[in-house]
Length: 563
Image 1 (cartoon, rainbow, N blue to C red):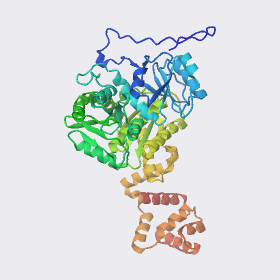
Image 2: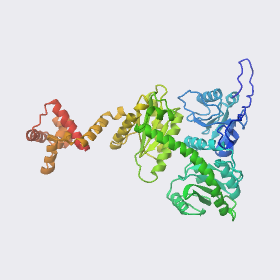
Image 3: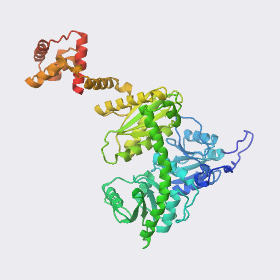
């Protein structure tokens, strides 16, 4: 952080950040969580096509920490050394100036803006506060950048090198991509089994094509028939494959190899052939690189997946009420006695193709946007749904939770072409109430799935009547006697005799006894309707003047429709 000065002092260049010293009792370097990652390393790995320095008052060798998404509605302190992503904040706005001041106050390392053709007006303020300013390509989504940094920063802290390829530190996939690119002779991307970009090379002079550029910016390979066919070929191959064309895309030739461990495919490596053809040994070199890359990718995946599985199982236990709620909530970092919100998201079009992949992407998306709202959700995918439990350290209005849910819905629709339904419950006053809140959001999603498509997220107040009828319908399924009596007799009579008595009674009740309106709904004359209604009353001994009878008949009709 820049040195503070009194108002009487003139402008003063901020002092460089002190580097962190490792204590004698610190863990070995290969597991040292305090190992420094610098701004220079971040910029080098992202590359000039993605990130550009606007200001670096303390130089490029300052330490950086984890990425944090700035929420314009929150004024909480920023973490020391944080990489602050200025989502929704322009580089020429007063909000941008305030964010730079907050970053300086919290000793954050850098603020990242998207320029969108504008210029940053606050370079002097950044220099005064000792905060670096960086711009990223407008085409890169904030969620992609956040995910990339969240995965990469921990791996850059690894300092144990493996022999074989340029002594790359274990888990540093960006360094590995550069080493492979230098060895094979083309631009490299390393992907996970779901075709998400984990890292890419950034050597001077390397050439990539437009599809590869867009893949890096979006972290996700385009989903086209030609691309799917190419991946099918890759997963079926035991070695390196070559692609000179992909249906529907204008590409440069490329090589690809699957990365496998013990028969399990854990990812792939792709090399784009630039203006200079790849050498005759390129395929052998790429095959050897895949064997070395397996160790790096296993290391990265293991540390990430173990944590996700543990947290996922804990959250599942909390949602289902299987174990002691106080203990489980504490292990998830939640205050057992504090209020929480429970959200649930469901794909409206989830089939059996790539379901697991899409759910896991949604888990990442929910977690990322929750971080943007400074709420720190615990997320897990259960069946067709993704659940999030968000701590509410203070009273947060429902409108804010709806905004968070709607941001997730909007992003999923625009970037992942996924249609979602969302439900919110703010009724959990402690960890012990979470299972009931889970039942509530499940009921909301069921109502939404049976109703006409809605825009936005729903709380129980939005669907109260339909939710109650749905619960009564479930009860009627278990207790069939709830729909016996005259209603059942009417249904049998219509089915056997071809009459229209049930629709007549329904129209009468829905029109509150207004016969002309009821007749119009059925498209018949009012006198015809009166005759039918009189026959209904006579044949089935109904008393439509009794309030209780009318209420029960109306409920039975609705339950009959639902069962």
